[in-house]
Length: 314
Ligand SMILES: Nc1ncnc2c1ncn2[C@@H]1O[C@H](COP(=O)(O)OP(=O)(O)O)[C@@H](O)[C@H]1O
Ligand SMILES: [Mg+2]
Image (cartoon, rainbow, N blue to C red):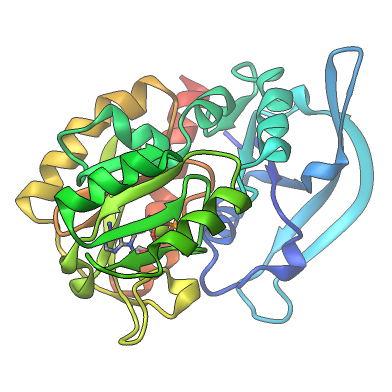
């Protein structure tokens, strides 16, 4: 049965056609005969408690430089859709949080993927703390003495913003790095939130593995090897995607997380694992599914639509 699908995303003209996971989802939806509508978050309006958006009919093509066509804008109640894909990229800030509140008004009558209340309640580096046995030694704080004590215990550490993304402001400090004091001051003035202090994991040189779970089940994975001159494995920072298999410890992590993700309506999730340690649970707008397919892995966009169709049509 064709579904009436809307996608809430950042401007479609700016995406990287070859790498974008949202685009992969749209291509698959279209191939299955679902009708696609497109809007950016700033086209939403809540009037007397009812959520509207000015949307445009969307056609997609897997052609760089000519990847989409849009129809005329028309204002519709978002509750008229069967499914809304919430796929705008972080930052996870008050703008993002406001979007989740707005979409919560139409979910679950309209199925929002991922469940917007759960997205709000599971910030990627916060949610991990529900699984302390799976994560590396990790401290969330802005308290100088706490960080000093953690550093004394663990030696080399990484400091990174709690709501950071794409590898932004991720620093490694060796045991006796004299820049610690200045870096502390810089974090304290730049960020209002506590930040993440984590034991440095030397295994990062062998990659930060992105593992995709669909409705709580392992669906596929890609390893990302950092560039020789960088700590960060993020592909936007020059990390190179490599084909990979799941290790037993990683299967265990997936098994441990699955029920919690399913219970929260977090249908499309990407977790990050370094040396067998869980560092992030990405629920906002995970990426990686095109890289996985390009490397000969499974078609995760198809798995996601199988799940959505099943849940929507009973
Ligand atoms: N504890 C750590 N040990 C070693 N490398 C790390 C650690 N934390 C982060 N990194 C490196 O920094 C990158 C970005 O950090 P991450 O926590 O994934 O934040 P982001 O949300 O910005 O992707 C990781 O892919 C990894 O290469
Ligand atoms: Mg990451």
